[in-house]
Structure formats: structure tokens, C-alpha cells
Amino acid sequence: EQNTSSQENGSTSVARLPLSKIIKSPRKRILVTGGAGFIGSHLVDRLMEGGHNEVIVADNFFTGTKDNIRRWIGHPNFELIRHDVTNPLLVEVDQIYHLACPASPIFYKYNPVKTTKTNVLGTLNMLGLAKRVRARFLLTSTSEVYGDPLEHPQTEEYWGNVNPIGVRSCYDEGKRIAETLAFDYHRQHGVEIRVARIFNTYGPRMNIDDGRVVSNFIAQALRGEEMTVQVPGTQTRSFCYVSDMVDGLIRLMEGNDTGPINLGNPGEFTMLELAARVKELVVPSASWRMVDNTPDDPRKRKPDISKAKAILGWEPKVTLREGLPLMAADFQERLGLTDKKQQ
Ligand code: NAD
Ligand code: UDP
Ligand code: UDP
Image (cartoon, rainbow, N blue to C red; front, side, top):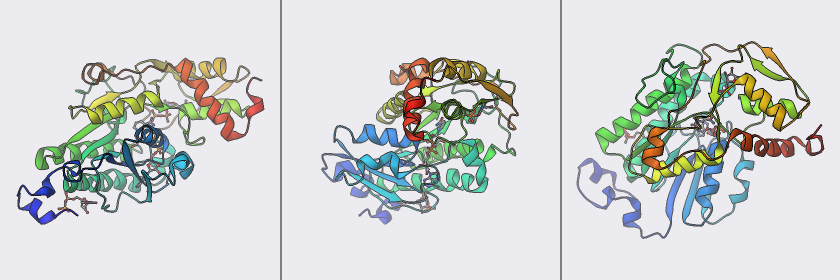
């Protein structure tokens, strides 16, 4: 156990050393908050494969499920804790990937005060933990910190155009203060931090009814429903396949740069183009209709990933054309629609 009082006295006792320097464990101990979610569970797969790490997942199962990590339950290097990050957590780890936070507008708007608590108190607790055990801490921030951007594409230097009192603010302002906390723990307490600004990511295991555009279009097309293109349909997004995202997150954690670093696929599509791609690649008979939009919807978004390329040697490999059918195969199976694919 760590001796916190010696930390406060600023002494150089063992408590100030990273755990890996004290306990000669052959494996790195890694905490993944939100590890039962979409991106988190793919990250857990990658961290567990190879057997070099011990992984602890802390998740309250608000939007994640045990199904996403079922293959690891019972594995000696894996531990699952039902835990809400708004409460303190005592574990001994070398690295913390802090993903816990609902990512889909439907879920983060459902209980916006809770979303703010998750971003503020949850991030504070995980930074307090990182400080105590001298763990490296990675925050999954978001392109939403740029708001409805007035610069295009968005570089990390852009400060954003964010509504502080809107219905999305619990999420985007929440992530902005989470970034602030990370940098203040770094400057004030010397915590090693990494900040990723994730742009729209898609792939297998996305919550089928979570309301995000790629999951909506694929589920609607497979169910024989019309895809719902929100007006005007010319708004753009850039979609990154989840395996590329996980690769970028691990490179960021293992590298030497604090960030913030944009991680996303620079390929930019309008929502009408996306619907057309789903029709072409997933269900040729699919169609769409125009529906109302939601408040504060950013009109365009595309990452500038020069920094990720230069610093992490990273760029996405999976194109939308390759990724959409991979995601559709997973959705088909989970929807029990295996026979309906090529109508
Ligand atoms: P997700 O909703 O699938 O995963 C979030 C996980 O966090 C879930 O397992 C959920 O149960 C858990 N969680 C939520 N609140 C919690 C709490 N208070 N305590 C403990 N666990 C909690 O979302 P995702 O797409 O996997 O996103 C993961 C992270 O990446 C989030 O921080 C999100 O903001 C960020 N991100 C995602 C995207 C994207 O396009 N998917 C884009 C930008 C940023
Ligand atoms: N914290 C935690 N796990 C730990 C250490 C701290 O959850 O191992 C929480 C702690 O409860 C506090 C937050 O992290 O709410 C910030 O901790 P810090 O030590 O930075 O601040 P303080 O406790 O002095 O307010
Ligand atoms: N969108 C859409 N149809 C849907 C869901 C979303 O046209 O059924 C649009 C939405 O207006 C937005 C874009 O898709 O412009 C991305 O929305 P999403 O909620 O997936 O992510 P975010 O707004 O967080 O980027």
C-alpha cells in the first residue's frame, strides 16, 4: 500500500515511484474506466492480447455491457469492477485509460447533471488516483471541445466555439473542464498525462440504439426501415474505424507527448453521402427520409491529424468503404437478421 503522508511531505520514499519500479511485476497493470463500452472494450481486447498486461475495467454499465468484455471474464489477468467513477477508487496501477462517460447524445442528454458529474468528479477522482499511485493518465476527450467550429479542419490550437448553456454543454463543456483538470494535475502535481481528442468513431459493438448516425443508418437499413437523415443532410463528419482509434490511443499512451492530439479519420462525408454509402455497401434496397435536427448540431467537422502523424507516426488505415460492412456484419448478427443481408 502507498504511504500518502510521505507524498504530501514531498519525500522521495518509494511511494513517489511508479508501481512498476517497486513491484517487479512482469506485467503492466492498466485500469480502463468505461472498459465495458464500445471503444473501451476494443481497447481491452488489444491490451489483453499478448498477455503482457493485467487489465482492470471499472464501469457502471450505464451504456456499456458485460457482453462486450465477456471473453475476458475469468481470465487471470483480467478484473471487472462495477464502479461509478464519480466515487473514489482505490487500485494500484501503472496506467489509467479514462474513457468512462456516455458518448452518444441520447445518453449524455438523458441525465445531463450526471454527465457533468462524470466528466468533472469522475476525471478528478481518476487524476487523484493517478497522482497517488504515480500512474500515467490518458483522457479520451472529444472533437466536441471545438463546438460548432469556425475553423476547418480543426487543429489542436483551435480553442473552439462552444455554447456553455446548451443541451450539449454537459458533454462538451464537461470534456473541456476534464482537459483543464488533466493539465492542472500535470502542472501542479507532475502527473503524467495524455489527452486524445477523439473524432466520430464507429465499428462493431456500438450500442445498436444509441442514436449515433452510423449505428442508426446501419440498424435502420438492416431492419428495412428508412434511414433518418437529419436536415440539412449537408452537415459533415469524419468517421474513424475503431481498430484505428485503439491503435492511436495506445501509441499516445506509450509516447512522450501530453497532447492534446486529434485522433480521427480525415475522410469527410455529408450525412447524405453516408446514407448513400450504407445503401451501396450494406442494403442496396435501403432508402432515406429527411427528419428534424437537434439543437447545436455542428455543421462540419474534420480533424487535422498532422500532429498525430508527426508525433505518433499514426494515421487511420481502414476506409469507410471497408469499415461499414464490418460493422454491418456485427449488427446483423446481434439483430438476428443473418438471412436478410442482401435483399
Ligand atoms: P460508450 O458509451 O460505449 O462507453 C462509455 C463507457 O463508460 C460505458 O461502458 C459506460 O457504461 C461507462 N460509464 C459511463 N458513465 C460512467 C460512470 N459514471 N462511471 C463508470 N463508468 C461509466 O462510449 P464510447 O463511444 O466507447 O466512448 C468512450 C470514450 O470516448 C468516452 O469518454 C467518449 O466521450 C469518448 N469519445 C467517443 C467518441 C465516439 O465517436 N465514440 C468520440 C469522441 C470521444
Ligand atoms: N482519489 C481516488 N483514488 C485515489 C486517490 C484519490 O479516487 O487513489 C480521489 C479523491 O477521493 C479525491 C480526488 O481523487 O476526491 C482528488 O484527489 P486529490 O488527492 O488530488 O485531492 P484531495 O483528496 O486532496 O482533494
Ligand atoms: N444524424 C442523422 N441521422 C441520425 C442521427 C444523426 O442525420 O439518425 C446526423 C446529426 O445531425 C449529425 C451527425 O449525424 O450532424 C452526427 O451525429 P451523431 O449523433 O452521430 O454524432 P455527433 O453529433 O456527436 O458528431
